[in-house]
Length: 470
Image (cartoon, rainbow, N blue to C red; front, side, top):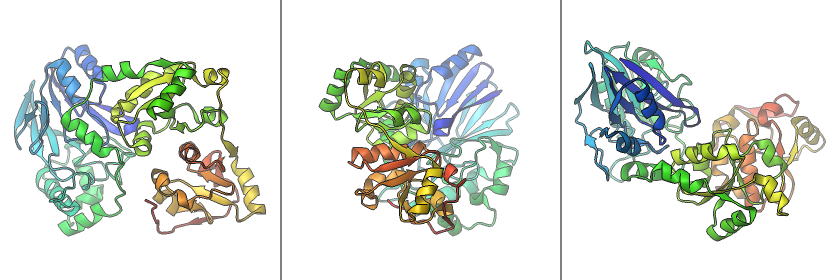
């Protein structure tokens, strides 16, 4: 018996390869499925099942493509309804795999179709749980993503309590827990950086699995402090339920080189987002006016989803040539399939064609400290998350979390210079590009962000109650 976790850091997502005696199952595959096929072939195994724990909201699964390429059936748990052929397994059903079995455990709560897969070894002993978004290390799945008129968040949280207590917690403490996500995912709020644990450890450390916890306490704690989910989540659910285009077609369509003139014409004719994915340093030095910066080297795909939202939005890429394939792949993982081309020759070709470029004004943290010393009323805008800002921030800073910046432009000065920062410089540059697109050209980016600011004597304030801007 072989189990491999295939973890994708930019999505904080875990897919899994399970193999026994020449037969394999893949749990929650990503959109690009060839690595799973190659892995099985390298081990002389045949993929027998494509197992889905639920309809994912934060990424588009590769279940359809993997099933088409291997002939393996797609398996969902109870309550799942799709527009394509799939096996809807019953609660308690056992799927034979070589010398072992995978037991289907219906665990509604995160969503009503949420299912955990229990791998039983050759002796029929519970070996590992593939929990999807039902149970994370340090947390449980948020119960608000499948809310409908007849089901409240509290209803879903109550279902989740029952699923955990009645279905998972009675299993042996040495059962390995393989979660669907780790720290950084928007599918939970308190996830561990670890990606593999045991059920016993979770019973001892996970706040949501306390033995003396009542259902009312669970509902209160699990629903407390939930931020609104990213706007692209429902669109990803729809794609996972209804189907999507082949990633091969998406790649072919997106990898179209466009001359500067053709790129400019496409931007004007399609109202496409000009997405600059180069490094922060490259974007600061020169970029196309009104282009949006979301660097490939950061949390690229989730931030595209958070800032662009509409997965059908046409996208034109500004990138280095060796970034194109990776960018289209990572965009497709979160459902953004409508890349229509990229700027051939990059920003250098754009400049050589005599076309306008823009740049970002910057200062280092020491220069900001000098400014604040001489002008204590100089405006500072902090675009970090609520919790980061609440823990500590520059005294009198204006807080506008990046996720909600377009809805809170009225909080940002437009008629005077201001200093813009995040934690390290990635998010503030995204914010700066968004602001420029809205006509704000008075932001000065603080190099190194708050990590650099704390090394100076700039006065700071800490431990306040967060007041999220949404």
